[in-house]
Amino acid sequence: MQTTTISFSNMHSHGELFANVLRARRQSFIVQNNWDLPQAEGMEFDQYDTPASRWVAVHERGEVLAGIRLTPTTARCGIYSYMIRDAQRGILGGSIPQNLLHDEAPVDDLVWESSRVFVSHAVPTNIRRRVHAQLIDGLNQAARELGASRHIGLINASWPRWYRRCGMEGEAMGPVLNFDDGDFQVVATNLTQKLH
Image (cartoon, rainbow, N blue to C red):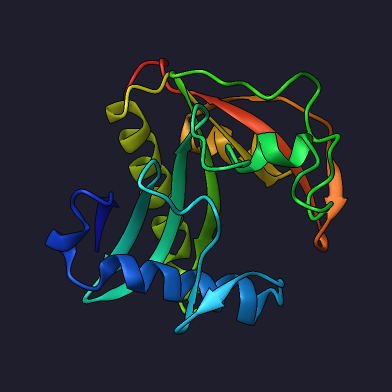
């Protein structure tokens, strides 16, 4: 099992990996979760899959086991910036509640957003926790290499329990909200803590 950070600059070096990430996202979000998202040629994508973003993939023998997208909070593409900020600004059509943050969404070179987090439903239960841990380690490493001191994400509201298990420091940036059949909260992850 390996972890790879993909960018538009290096995707040519990784064969079908980027396309396989988008295929795995389609399977996870559109097929399994039944979310109404853009898709083409068996791949899920959205307006944030631009050259500004990076994608962290956990994969083995060509199969994507898990993935996540990192987008700088300074990103701009037409009317869009990044998902959490655009939800707060009300330009996502209400798919994510506008009141997801206590304060204004950050726009900061040192803060990146993590989004489109998934672990494939095909990952066996006995290795699922290991795959998730490898994904989070890859996310944190990639964000640090990009110069981030924090990353923010809209994640499952059970985060305090598993953050402690992973030795991570997090801070709630908004209320717990119920939508898409779950409880979610925006969390900032501190990347300047002591590395282990």
